[in-house]
Image 1: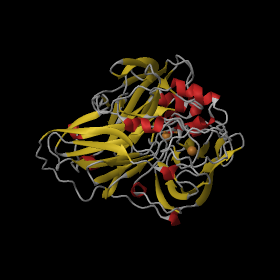
Image 2: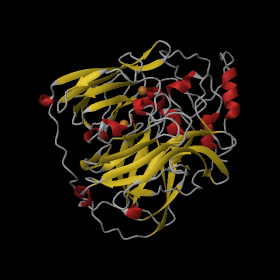
Image 3: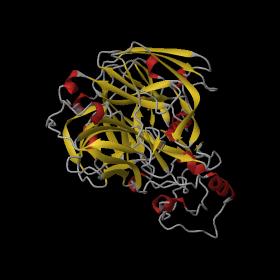
Image 4: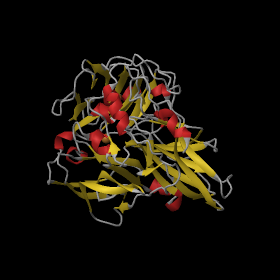
Length: 504
Ligand code: C2O
Ligand code: CU
Ligand code: CU
């Protein structure tokens, strides 16, 4: 067994009682210690007993590639949220939730101008709804939590896709249960293509690989463990010790000595990744949440908070057949000083995500264009209004925006259709929040913190707001209707860091 994965598993002191506003002490996770004065350890012990102590041997399972539903080939698709038993591990069936009976859920592929057409049935015992994250579609199609449908009911989704190429995603969005449902499987990728992108000749087919990254917890029977409701740090966000990529635990993927386009989504509950390769120093960032960048940017690592996407090009040309390259997270301590479950690797943990096995020589003659697309910059002078949204914890440890717990029907902001606004996103907590708005795409104007992110240059629908930082974004509102904006840490949006705006 590989010790690396067990370093973080040791019993840590957890003698603090979480009250929401309290910052957790800076326990050094690398030095496991037993504390004689640890407080209420009873609930902690029961959590540890549930934990899986069996090793998940990394890089032994082949990366699963999701099937595709391509709307240039089919007219209609059928989804039903359902309980399923699937082989996440080859040696056991795990109880999960799926849309079509297996995991990973299919990737939707559609061209700009195409029509999306899907019948959705809820076969769960609670109401739910599907949201198309990043899509700018009419309110009835967006999947607002108020539109959740009951058990055995169906909803017909039908809309035209009018926006540019990019890597989007879909997931369920019932109020208070989004975290649990996504955790158990209810999400997938949604790729939009357009002519402009096609023209660029980016790597495609086997050289285009989608990667949905999600950390999870399993028990000894290989069943998923979600949060322990009695254990308050889990309400701050559920972290896990086993990283799934496309629903495959710490997998490997066979590649040739050429360029690959990786479309990466962080579909985790709370964890922010700092992605890097162990033996490839530089790779190219070519796209963000809602489309391509103006030009490729060479980076050594990229920070990806929950719900963000990056489109990257990695080149294996200098590798030999037989070589192996690990995609890992370097850890991102800056993103969190808040109390999360100490039984699992924290934000600072270096973790392996997957491994690429170079298995074939390939003469890659393709050339990546220097210029990708143009991104017209929105001007501050066009903004007719500036709003400030604050991220706060109120008493009882409730995560909120502007100190108001979410109300599905309350209008928190009224926006004029067709207008441009600046939103100042102010985080006053020692934990980063990925802030997301439905029904728009936006640009980042600036952040007052020291950290700069190359992803800030692209079209965004989710932006990381660092601890105590203020990020200013500029948004043009083109779709009328009632939508939500929220923190995309799943346990935060469920509890109750979300609000509504009406565009009219
Ligand atoms: Cu990923 Cu409210 O959305
Ligand atoms: Cu969304
Ligand atoms: Cu949050």
